[in-house]
Image 1 (cartoon, helix red, strand yellow):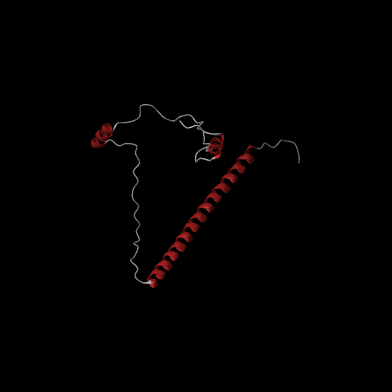
Image 2 (cartoon, one colour):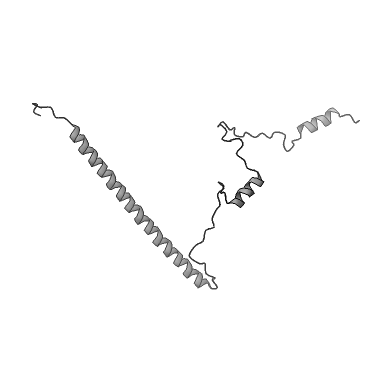
Length: 135
């Protein structure tokens, strides 16, 4: 067995190693657990349920299909025309969305004003004017 001298001990203690001073301050979960025991199904039970047509709470993402086809573009001028067409469609759609939002805001504002007027009428009816006093 080889003895380490003071010189070699000093050298090895000064070397930095990859994970010497690695500290990770993670987060601690303080919320109560939402796990409910015994609500798991085995693979066999899942297959039996599927074959019997019993639905599960698993969400299935449906694919999205768009009604516009992306053309095969051979020429740059076709690409520019397609890009301009898409920009025009985008502008028309954004104007339509803005109009719908404006209509909705106007409708909500009218409903708010109507409710305020109804509230004023109700408070005026409830006010009792004292008899015999002239203001």
